[in-house]
Image 1 (cartoon, helix red, strand yellow):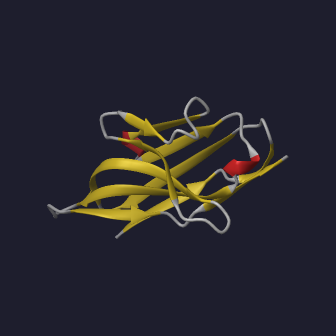
Image 2 (cartoon, helix red, strand yellow):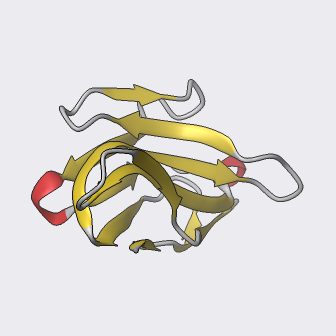
Length: 121
């Protein structure tokens, strides 16, 4: 079994910063791409940023220059540093990871439970 646990969400004023963390645990052999998604109130879930096991990153246009995704492969953890936050960044933020478990060859996608980020104007 594999679990992803997010932390670091909260309430912040516009222009402020938050750092989200997502730690994967369980019978993990390796993790390929990790990513952050978000779901604003009443809207569909959208991709925020991705990072490969080698460190290559990709960002949604709406967060480029403000958010930074990073990971610590030794800790099976992905981070999202969010700066210059705007009210439109308010959402539940989810991490996901493409995991190869021990003693298997297939890759399975796992999701965290989500963490709320609220940006006040």
